Amino acid sequence: MNYWVLKSLKDFIKFNGRSCRTESRYFLIFNILIGVSAGLIDMLMGFTIEIIPGIPTLILSEITRGILILPNTSLIIRRLHDINKSGWWMLLFFTIVGIIPMLYWLYFKEGDQYENNYGTIDIIIND
Image (cartoon, rainbow, N blue to C red; front, side, top):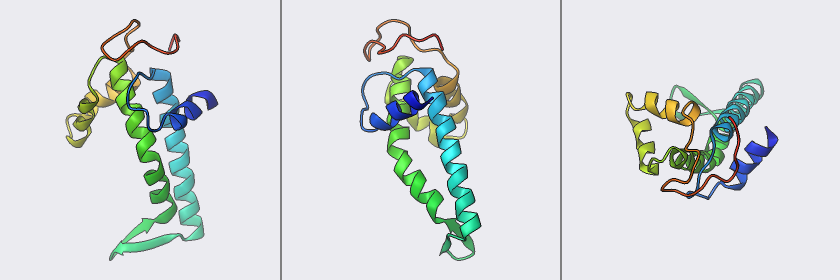
């Protein structure tokens, strides 16, 4: 697991190439663990502010989301390249109906085993 998370964090600005399904799954688990931990620390320590009156904002959670947005974006684009789709398909996340195929493509659909329009796969893995 450490290998895949570190690979995703190291390639945070790499928008070309491909990423396998295993890498996206482990990075999702990492995101959930970091988000829950930051939220718990915020709530236990009382690190909240009200940017909008009446709505508390968890400071540490927002900082971690801001830090992880670029690695998540680059991983999503590389994962879409793995299934031979353009990175522009990521815009489906902004539609309610588009979330379902995006989740399927990112975490369940097997990538191309051979070279596609976006290059060859770096690591051959049975995931």
